[in-house]
Amino acid sequence: MVARYFSRNGEILPTSQAVVSLDDVAYSYGYGVYETIRVSGGVPYFADEHCARLLASAETISLEHRFSADLILQSINELIVRNSLEASNLKILLIGGKTGSDATLYIQSLNPLFPNPKLYKTGVHCITEQYERPFPHAKTLNMLPSYLAYKKAVAASAYDALLVNRVGAITEGSRTNFFCLKGTTIFSPPDEDILLGVMRMAMLQVAATQGFTIVRKPILLTEIASYDAAFLTSTSSKIMPIRSIDDHTFGEIPATLTDFMQHFNQFLADYGGRLAVLETWDHAFGVSK
Image (tube, rainbow, N blue to C red; front, side, top):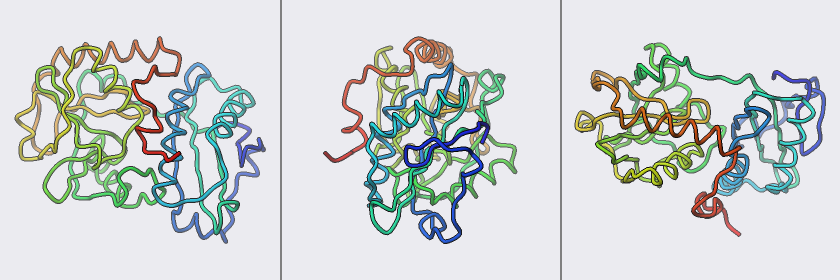
């Protein structure tokens, strides 16, 4: 953690008290969900959307708790003010318990991790790894296979590992969402197969206003050469172009993509951390009423 304080169950406490008991079986077994929120200029970007997904993830794995979106958002804002944060990543952990009243909500401040700026011009290399997450819509603490895939990517000097399912389709990265581009059509893996990334949803919404056609379909690894380009989205990277996947290298990054990246960056700078959404995020993330 990079700040003096963290939040536990809505209470601001010194980071010296940020400990987890060895008797916490739920934490040891990964029975929890999490979110990472980017703070820039003191503004928590997409805070409403991240909270909605956190609650949806908890519902997906039947994690009962007593925390509302309002309390989480209030805790986020209080922590930013108390720590005088200008730039940071906030990590939210919702850990289950025997009952809903035993669940614990942690919010901590981490060093922001941003990619090398030159990668946006050159694109990044990715490897592929065979793996399907058991709960695609839930961002859970059960991250071992994804962690091992990312570790392989680092060993191969790659930016990320792209996960390939049983039919040979790329679904997502170990910590990113994945897309292909052909002309002015953006191809995304089907929603039901992936984590519905917050930056992904923002990107798709802005792309639709810029004249892009959005197609959701399986993206087969064997057909990757038929696309003009590919790219990733994530909280830390925004839109990151891909230079190569395994042994396939794409050509020069299309002007269509570079222009859209600039437009999207300007959108993020201008809109103040919130979206004028086209649909409710509760509906988008499947949160029950």
